[in-house]
Length: 504
Image (cartoon, rainbow, N blue to C red; front, side, top):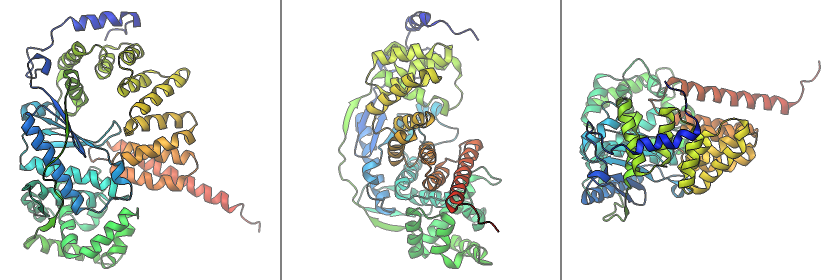
């Protein structure tokens, strides 16, 4: 690995990159500027679709997305007041072909949903939408919607309800929707590999001894039984979770006959579910205000932003090698020599001075929050704290609805001992992104620093609920340690409030 060049040599490095041709001969992808399919962005009420599908296919997809969301909203609990106004648009990246999609997809994934601190939630899939992908969309939109409707989501509940809603993927495009139709593969697995209810209720998403698909199937079966055999208790459970009641307590209150503390109660539930799985399972018919026509605003996606999309997804698929990454970055820089995403990758690849590249990007794109975020990340150390804060403030001003921009500023202010200033930014980020574990945990940290541990604890619990299954075990342990710290903080505060113990 060569030594980092001096900042003065950066223009020469860029000049060398820009002198090379756009499309690499060995690659199947061709950027729009060099004859590839044009990309378009369609913005509707609840979605931003970016795709290289043809215009009629893109319009049909955004209409289907809005219909699916309408079906989800008609079936699931009503969000808390104000949550609908805070709901972030879901970004959907739809590649025109499976061949284009596979380099950016985890192995075996028909599509996937990204919930993280780096901006709005994002669904990625192949634009050739078949039944399985429609089911996936219904599944992931359920997760997105539930995040704004429920303050607590035990894993079995969230995944079971998301699978329950997958039948919306059969969307006939009419007002009457059918939900809860048993998916054949889930039902077969629930019959063949049952998960004891006691184990299922304790499922937290961490890797276990059994395949996760067993937990998904068992969760779906339990939700189906509750929805169709114990609807009043199920509605009570939903209400309690929406209010933030601890899942174990909510279960025992809504289903007192199945309280885990009662001897034999959960074993009786196991037998009931096994019998239920063998019988005919019905679907439920729901009327929904499914939009007949969907309005949207369409604009072209610049070729450099197509490269930026690919770079944002680069590490989520199979390894493509350094040469392929260099080609992608080079092509992006041909289109825009100061693009913040491309320059950030260039800095990391070639060990160039990130601050010099970030300043170049800010100068060229003063209204792009990504450039200011890049600059903030490049300004390290206490000596740069003021400039770093200013850059993060500018990013938040330019993107006031982006939870990442707000979260980053709140955490910077927290680190500088000014959690009171960071509080409104952390709160707003959590309102916009209740599906993001880092954002929720960041808000909890700010509250804890202000001595409000009682408010931090439920937020940290929600962060644990929201942590995706594929996250490293260390991320779960770190959140759990934070929860322990806040509990200890509250315990110590109660002791101080109680005063010294009386002398004997």
